[in-house]
Image 1 (cartoon, rainbow, N blue to C red):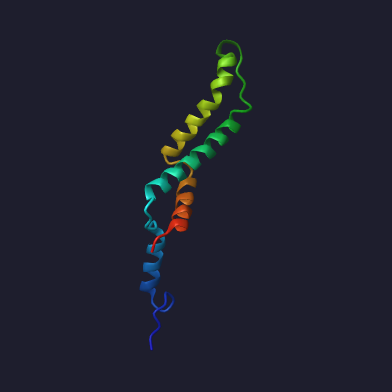
Image 2: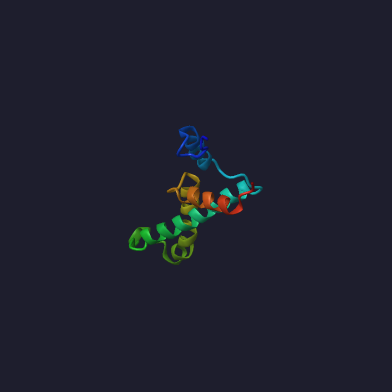
Length: 105
């Protein structure tokens, strides 16, 4: 009697590994991808804001109150652009988890 398990059959373990890399089938795959990208953009904008916290402007290049007011919007746009350009990989992990949670068999 042959066992049909991934350990007994290397071909089955290869198929299982390939299936794990494929995104799950869900009715909302595009929305899951967008939500994951939005999450990464928010994370990156917070990270960029912290990076610029120590940068001071003065003299000729000081933006004054206008710069202070619009700086958060600038960081938000930085985060969105970075996420669209591939980000740091957070969106991929978040999307996989969203799809696992919504998986339809």
